[in-house]
Amino acid sequence: MSDTRNAIDRFFAISARGSTLSREVRGGIATFFTMAYIVVLNPLIIATGKDVDGEFIADSATAPVALVAAGTAFVAGVLTIVMGVVGRVPFAMAAGLGLNAFVTFQIATVMTWEEAMGLVFLEGVIIAVLVLTGLRTAVFHAIPAQLKTAISVGIGLFIALIGFVDAGFVRKAAGTPLELGIGGSLTSWPIFVFIVGLLATAAMVARKVKGAILIGIAGTTILAIVVEMIAKAGAFSPENPGGWQLNQPVVPDQVFGFHNPLTLFTEFDPFGGFVRVDVLLAALFVFTLLITDFFDTMGTMVGVGRQANLVQEDGTLPRTKEILLVDSIGAAVGGAGSVSSNTTYIESAAGVGEGARTGLASVVTGLLFLVAIFFAPLVTVVPYEAAAPALVLVGFMMMTAIRDIDWNDFEIAIPAFLTIVIMPFTYSISNGIGAGFISYVLVKVVRGKTREIHPLLWTVAALFALYFAIGPIRALFGI
Image (tube, rainbow, N blue to C red; front, side, top):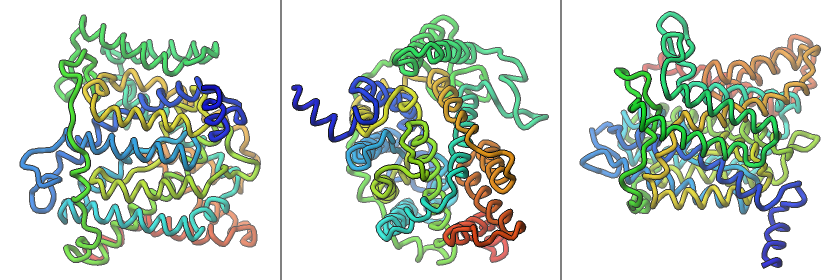
């Protein structure tokens, strides 16, 4: 047994990175519980949408929610394990939120599900080629170190906002963009549970309690179940704004259930979309998917990698090419498996906050996703209000890197500021990165320092300018 443990330690460099086997396991479990919602949320988006022919995915007569849930868990589990073994970093993968909505509400409305998922598959293949040719890695290396720090800080602020919004602590308002709770008041039992969970987890983190985040998730979930038994807040709806977000914390009636996810792997057509719609429109769809995947992952790598102390002095991570390749394959596999593009998840930071530093944590997370195929009812017990405190506190941890940015140097401070604030303000990592790159190039140009701009950054800034101009371009050409 000791030889096996030593072999695992050497392979994943557990001791070398200052971690332990128990920390990796705890971290893997924490990451799983902070992102297990995707097993429920992805099928609610993908499986309930109809394509241009008015059909559900997999040619189902009714919305195949359970089947897509199984497929979501299966693809996420396999890819996360591969990321752990090949990339050897504590990064978990799953269907990307935002991308799945784009596929459902924009692409699938003008073509069949098979053709829409085919474009997702094609986008993943293109990104994989960019990795193998070294271009994606070269772009990663070309980003200035302080701009990478800004990406990390921006993501921290972004995921903290996600936590507050998911828990209903912050909501849309009629007179202002956002407001506190319901009508400016914290008047619901689920919000009470979130606040208790946040304060309790924060106290444990401050006291450096081992397993603080995982204990916080589990303890808050138990509290939520008890509160629901007594208060009967019910599920959230427009008529019941004080209900639980995403999952209602009740003991499930059914524990076991299975749907074969492999049946979804025959439902994609890589080139049919170019025949179904205008070639330019299909190309714009692929480009939008590609640019979002390309830089969302880059931002997540920097943010989570820095939190895990894996970022080296030059701002890069060990095994960068392997990490990017697995992520690229994830996009293609997600399309082939009809669950949308899979990408590296920022929620991986929850496991890092729990102490994870190596790919072993990803293996644990991946195995739990595979288990979730059979125990989906148990996965759906955890409400947003129980998982959100972990996101808020991890966001705090990631934001502490802001001290490494030289705010007296406007050439980096302005792009850094735009990167940080635009991420949460537009609810998009890619938008923040794009704003940072474009403003960095612009400031250098107006200061007469064009020689300091890496050649690849000119190209990336131009691509982001095109990315932001896609709407006007489509309007101009009537597509």
